[in-house]
Image (tube, rainbow, N blue to C red; front, side, top):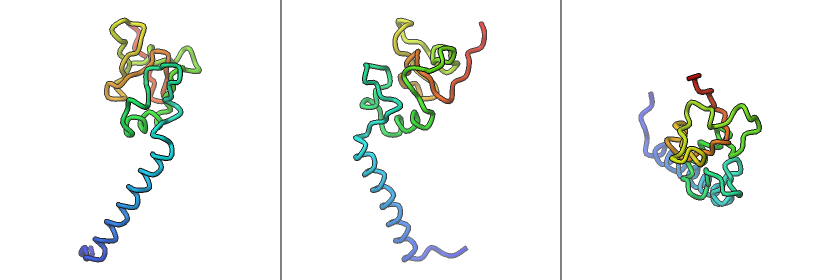
Length: 115
């Protein structure tokens, strides 16, 4: 294995800096918002209240506030915990306890075990 030279060290630093700057620029262009988790109607997972890594995780799992399949909603998912009132927003273990709409859905959905 080659030793890390001064030149390769600086080249690596420039590469990392360029990637970080590009990522920040892309986030700024999108306004830090993500369409799949958008909650224009006052949903549970408001991208403006989440960090970029939280919205990125939701985007990667294709989280939506309203499931297209009534049989596959967050309320019926093993990772979902209902809110205090039982009808409003709950939390999701996939999103480290972040908010989730009981009517929502993501690709990590797993049916709750029958009681």
